[in-house]
Image 1 (cartoon, rainbow, N blue to C red):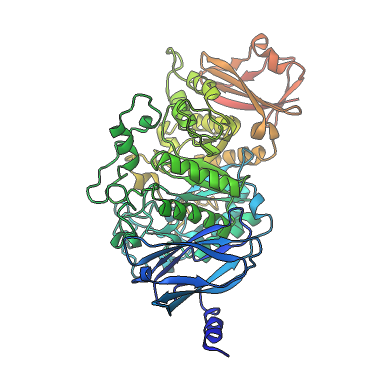
Image 2 (tube, rainbow, N blue to C red; image 1 turned 120 degrees about the vertical axis):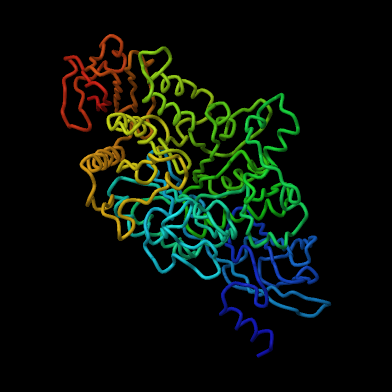
Length: 613
């Protein structure tokens, strides 16, 4: 046996990594992707002065890019249709002689991977901040060489929640009626402090060991899929953490925006669409850093752009994901985001993705959705966005006095009436709160009747509803709107908790009522096509009353929101166009059926869902 054959045989037994060096990213890839191109980043001391070569059927090197730092090499490969799954060595020659070797692997894709079905309006999404949900493995609370240590006291500290904690409670989520799971970022955040939230990535390819491992993340996906729960990854293209591994050895001078004298973005997101915007404002929005500890990535660098796109595809393929949540969507280079979203939708045409555009203006949000005809010619391929305008309208609608002009429930009517701005309003993600804003129950001043009304509207209006963990047990942040209080520990997630959302033990009577109320609604929604995918028709809100219907050819659901203190009776003449042809109305929550030959009444300060028959 020759030395080379023996070396190759030994290398095949090793994990995919640089034998004498540091990094290969992505560590492996797949055959059969629609785009056959692959860019492999190699980081190793003085790797830039080597020449790579390989011999594997169907795989060819088309380009080698050397950059300012001598410790990087970018290898462009084409994985042809004849390439088979397997491992092969990539040799690196220095002065014509072998210097070192990487063993690279091409994997087979899962069956029907390209046609995976993303989350839809038939799903209900549940958002988890993993560090605060449940501690399933106390052994990983602190990890050597990761600076931010666990402490359940103090501001912005790590509490120890992890992937195993989520896996342990998937049965609970399934029983509640949850069908999609959005988890805040799980990749490594090896920052000195305050990085429990996950938005300061220091390694785009590695799950943070304090949450678990890449294998644990795969196990979460598999366990969720077995229960009919789709897993949604939270990604950040705009920035990384200041302790990212490449910060001490940037590949190029333009890897970051304004690396030497960074400025903080002014967050004037309107400058992207503004026909009168100055170049200064447009540049500062896109190139300014989000915060000083989050360096702004320059996606105009083609090597970095490819790196980020491939990283997204890698996670979808590796972990068998069904959705993507994109952080700070309007902050990266907008042309890159079009390229990124187009590439993902080409590879996975049925995948669903949602972007964060934290604007209360529907016109600004609509700009980013796929299919929107923008006057400035910008073309996006992003299927969905978060509906921040409707979230704000819901809170104002519930809090305001409907006796005042243009206040109260009319805010819901007015906001939904602007759906003509969106290409696909039914693919917007609706929500009462999330990890960045005060808890919904706090926003409505802990009024349980209003909470019930809000939940009914969320789960019956158009769009894809999203709940934040703990909403079902009325979690609050009464002391402040600081993130660490908003992202409190889920009751029952730690052994010393005296109450548990998961088992019901120790909950107050009202918390128990809330949990069962929401459970009943969620489980009903899973069976009703009208509220999942049906059309919406509504009537202008008036005198504290808002009425709308969701309907298909075979189902019709009537929702009445009554904020007045008195019982309201529906005017048959006004609502006749949606009642005509039906004889009974069944109250979904009570099961009581009422003949429509009699006036339809709704108690004060309540919302009712009727199935018309």
